[in-house]
Length: 385
Ligand SMILES: Cc1cc2nc3c(=O)[nH]c(=O)nc-3n(C[C@H](O)[C@H](O)[C@H](O)COP(=O)(O)OP(=O)(O)OC[C@H]3O[C@@H](n4cnc5c(N)ncnc54)[C@H](O)[C@@H]3O)c2cc1C
Image (tube, rainbow, N blue to C red; front, side, top):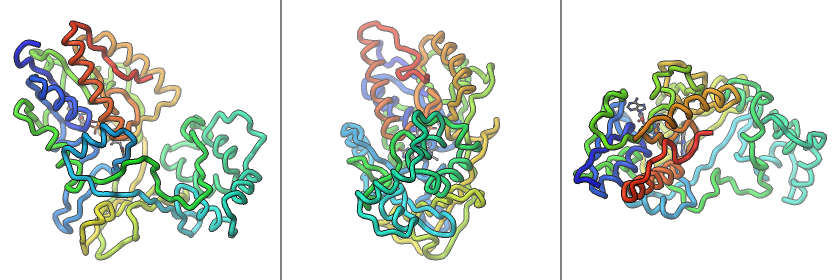
């Protein structure tokens, strides 16, 4: 490496911050730009000025991982407090526990099943005529049968994705979405928690290095790459190419904020499974910081819809049409030199935070290795298709 080679990182989310830190520590001069007026990307947290509640501005974020190196990494930049995500759902005028577990089953069917009995009963509900499920709907009917599907999956999935579950691939519902015990922890990873001072403070600490400069409210265009040895781009893949082939499909979210004096719903996340309720869930942010005490409360009603050109892209759709367009953009990206596309937007994939950090660490390490050996850095470490 030549002394103080300059690196441009587009995006100050977790992908950009981790790559910037890893390279700055190895002697590179790193410039990080972000179009927004804050760091941390979609994990951004901010204290509500009226109530003092730490708000997850772009929707609820719970850290969960089995990756010990990633867990140690985040704990090096923030104190993590224990936090278990326990989600409830309203369906047909009743509140149930999610993921569907023995309590949900017994409450829903008015039974007192033990695990083996519940398993045998759910098997009688399953549609065994479906031998090779092709769609989300078939997969759900095959696993749990019509009644549980209608109560817990059909309406919610339709609201979330804006299309009937029969139009979605079976792969979205990978495993049996039912537990035959009373375990109601949403995630089953070994390490789970919440950063004590929020994710933005954690990302600020990651970026706090003398060889990292952060420029906010700075939108990338390709002319800015001049003078940099390499660009790590965590913005939208199609945006890099000025959407020349069209836009990759995303779902966006609208958050309707409201406040409440006291405890609005008694938990952090309450889903609404019925199609008649237009929102998918209500998040009550103070429950994400159970170690804090706040009288006032900040809640978000969350609505999902198709993402327009001026909206924030949240969830990549990745159906057949999008995959064809994605192949075009991936081919264009492969032709670029000295640019690597990273993160959830750069590779058009849904990535949890721990996976994002793992991939960012691996990307930085591969870059260092390629620099040391004179090898070429690929456009993607993780192919989007
Ligand atoms: C609603 C929701 C809930 C989630 N909940 C969880 C959860 O509970 N647990 C979990 O592990 N993960 C969760 N995630 C995933 C998590 O948000 C991602 O893992 C993480 O945000 C990925 O980081 P990133 O840096 O790749 O992308 P981002 O956080 O999106 O960062 C990209 C950054 O690039 C900037 N940018 C884009 N284009 C440009 C441009 N042209 N010029 C300059 N800057 C640009 C953006 O402003 C943004 O700051 C959730 C995601 C969503 C959508």
